[in-house]
Structures are given as structure tokens and as C-alpha cells.
Amino acid sequence: MTNNTKRDRFFNMTLVLIHEKGFKATTMRDIAQNLQFEVANVYNYIASKQLFLEESLFGIQQEFLLAMDTIERSEYDTRKKLELVIGSYIQITSERPYEQALLVNEWRNLKTPKLEEFVKRRREYERQLETIIEQGIEMGQLRDMGSELAAKMILATLRWSYQKFLSNKAQSNPLILEKQLIDFIFHGILMK
Image 1 (tube, rainbow, N blue to C red):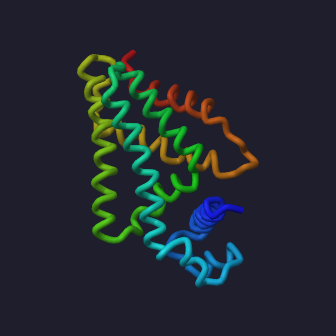
Image 2: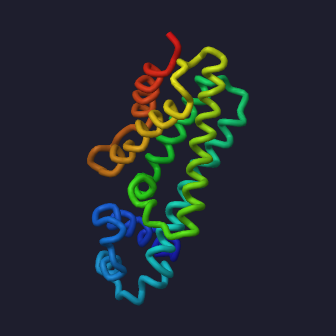
């Protein structure tokens, strides 16, 4: 077993444990016991629980930001950009559901200044989505319901999607979920 595989196993099992117990309730001892390690061995993988949270949250957040940057700068029309936003969100979530769960549920446990940086980056993602929506409203492609409200509604619809990918028993197809969410969201915001 390579160090990378051991690190991946450690990372994945810790994400599952934090999802099940919550960040605050999970101790370094819990992590060690879950992996059948001595507590001292946990420090070979992470310096602290807080640093694990930071690396996990900023890692997946960066993936979302890169996807959004690419989509926003593209020459596609508003509808296609929104489809790509939804598609990238579902794709990232399907590949990293426990990190997405952490992103949705545990970000408030970051400590300043990382918390402030995280919120600033999250707001930038939301602002980019609002810009896409504003362009669609201006072009008459989307209903004029306010770009901030529309962005928040879209993101609220997407944020729960990690739950569809947590259980190996329920092997959800990300492409089917993406289509269902696109249909649902567009039914509410497209001009008729």
C-alpha cells in the first residue's frame, strides 16, 4: 500500500466520521480509533483537526471557483452557462460528496482569518452566478425576479444534492440528477 493510498484512506474515513458525528463532536482520538491508529499516528497525516477542515473546505471550494470562472468567461448564452453551473456542481459533488457535505454543514467551524477568507470566496462564487443571471434577465431570457434571489434559490436547490451520493447502496447517476435539477430550476426562472 502506497503512502498516497494510506493518506487517501485516512482522508476519506475522516470525512465520513466528521459527517456522521459533526466536526465539533469528532476528536483526534475518535479519528485514531476509527482508523485503528494510535492517536500519535494521526499527526502523521494532519497537524490538527482545524487544519484538516481548512484543507478540505478550501480544496473543494477552489474546484467550484475554477469551474465557475471558466463558465462565466465562456461565450455561451445564459441558459447554457446555467446548465454548465448546475452540471459542474453536480459533477464535483458526485465525486466528492463528503467534502461537499463538509462545505454545506461545517464551514462555520473555521477560525478567523480562514473563516473570513472562506466567506469572501463563497460570496465571489455567488456574485459570479448573479452576474450570469443578470445577463439573462437583461437579454429577456430569464424572469426578472432579482439576480440575488434567483442565485440563492438555485444554490439552495443544489446544496442538498450531496446526500444523493453518500450511500454506495443508492448509486445515483449524476447525469440524471443534473437533468432533473436543470428542468426543475429552469421551470422557475426561464421566460415563458
